Image (cartoon, rainbow, N blue to C red):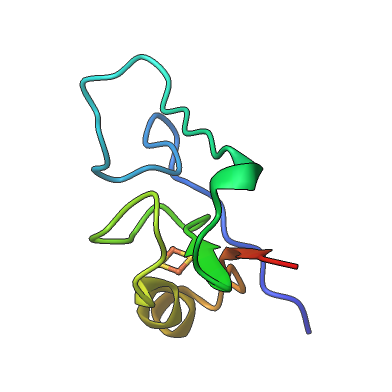
Length: 75
Ligand code: FES
């Protein structure tokens, strides 16, 4: 059965990343990819945001959520 996780009213999805910014936006110039694989965080729990550090696994286990990173792969 699917588990639906929702942020509490007034809490939002981002607990503590770059909270002084009105909107957190990151961009990647694809032609500059140098590594074969880079993982970008979509769970807002990474200690290395915007990069994924694996923190989504702890979040998923604690909440029943199913979030994971965006993977950029070099061709
Ligand atoms: Fe956020 Fe992996 S740490 S998606």
